[in-house]
Length: 132
Image (cartoon, rainbow, N blue to C red; front, side):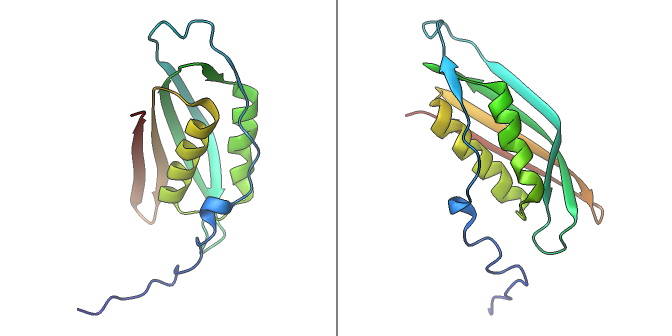
């Protein structure tokens, strides 16, 4: 069976190397306690890499901090930087969680990205990280 190549082929080849602002952290003085931090924003936007039109999403991020907690203003600025980035929904969610985990090194983290409907299709991307 012949694979049909997408017109999107190659548009995301550098998504993992994309330069974005860093996410700052601060020391968790209660690292001996189990807690879950829940973050939510309904202001996430990025750009469709094909059409250049804006995509809007609600992001939910839950994490169990270890030594570090995420500093929220820097995280807001990090998310804001996606407003000019052409990126697929799946790549946006994966990149955000990768950068979040790299900065904070939590016990576990989860993202749920609910993108607004486009052409009658709503996209929801979920991913979970559990430290081994």
